[in-house]
Amino acid sequence: MGSLRPYEILFILKPDLEEEATTAAIDRFANLIQQNQGSVEQISRWGKRRLAYEIAGYREGYYTLILFQGEPATAKELDRVMLLTDEVLRHIIVRRDAA
Image 1 (cartoon, rainbow, N blue to C red):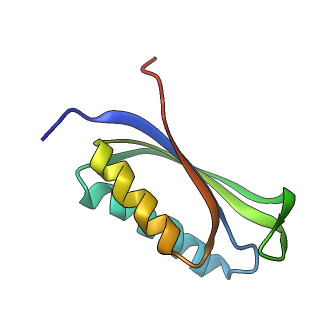
Image 2 (image 1 turned 180 degrees about the vertical axis):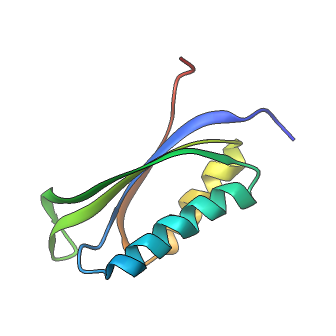
């Protein structure tokens, strides 16, 4: 097992999801991080916000930021699952600098 690195992922879910579906999706991503030898530090639900431009017919989305520690393989698997998840409009994973 390699050393854990700090990452953050910001993702936008479809705004018309039920609250239970939104929570389930966020929990699924947090669990995925933990299943891949990562640890979730913080989950920040920013809520519905207006998008800068229309994505797939949507003008707003549900923003969530997750700060986590993980290996590069953890981030790669999370990226793969995000791309396959219909509820996700956009996502970005960034490696944070060590403070």
